[in-house]
Amino acid sequence: MEGGGREFGPTMEAAVPAGLQAPQGMVLVPGGEFSMGSVDPVGLEGGGREDMNDARPVHRVRVRPFFMDETEVTNAQFEAFVRATGHVTIAERTPTQEEFPEAPPENLVAGSVLFTPPPGPVRLDDHLQWWAYVRGADWRHPEGPGSNIRGREDHPVVHVAWADAEAYARWAGKRLPTEAEWEFAARGGQAGNLYAWGNPMRPEGRWMANTFQGSFPDRDAALDGHKGIAPVKRYPPNAYGLYDIAGNVWEWCADWYRHDYYATLAAAGGVAVDPRGPASAHDPLEPGVPKRIQRGGSYLCTDQYCTRYMVGTRGKGEVSSATNHIGFRCVRDIR
Image (cartoon, rainbow, N blue to C red; front, side):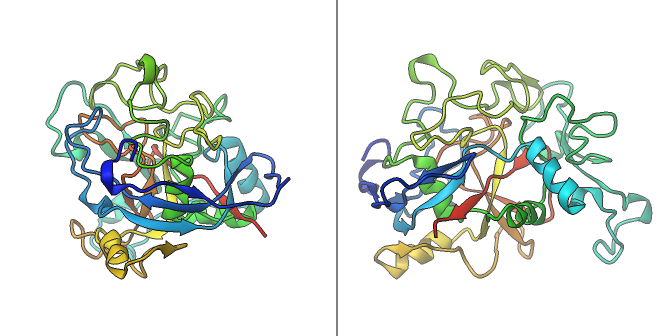
């Protein structure tokens, strides 16, 4: 069906009460039943080199209606939360010897992981060539000491770990979306499309999301109009009115990550109703590392390396990790 082939059935939106109005800054997502997951994108336009086998089998899911933030949470919104609560993000806290018993004391400094382009082309099998832990990098200092968010109030907040995003959501009277809610919303009522806007990566030559063009990771050509993170609402929204649901920054979800979770749901048969994710995390590539779901990809996604801007694909992140390409958006239940 659509771009997904025979594995995808139609999306059936739920009926919602007439006249129901979304809170300011949020949109109404009607919920309903849909096919969740991804085909193997290798060989498809913009599909990249990864088979995305943790996003299969495609399976049927039903979610209730909900409200969702129309944009990723911005620096201005997060700053209001910090002023109201005094919240200190994980990136701003000094790691303890108990947390990292094998680390030398001089390495236990507050900071975060920062994308740092190498001076020229490099092999893509070692991400440490473009990621570095930077002392003093945090949401207020997105490029490390000496940087700030003045003039970036409408940029997505970054350097937020999962607990920071969850704390903001709770303060705002919201919560983080489940992975199923996130994908239903991102698909915008369409069945099986490769991207949140349809099947061509660039319909009529138009860039639809903030992703990476050029030579990854050393040269961002910014053909889409933005080098690095873009302010919110610079690209068209999807059919539900959600901006930057692909690219720009990764978005934390509520669920634990397991590579085999979709197989578990499919084996149960029928339609999974409001799935909340597995009871615990497991990534066979890093056993024992607790990870939560991230969705949507970021401004660093490219078919040269990572194509998780494709709507049915899955990302994952260690729960205390924070980088300058991870953010979030929230949802609110309809009562």
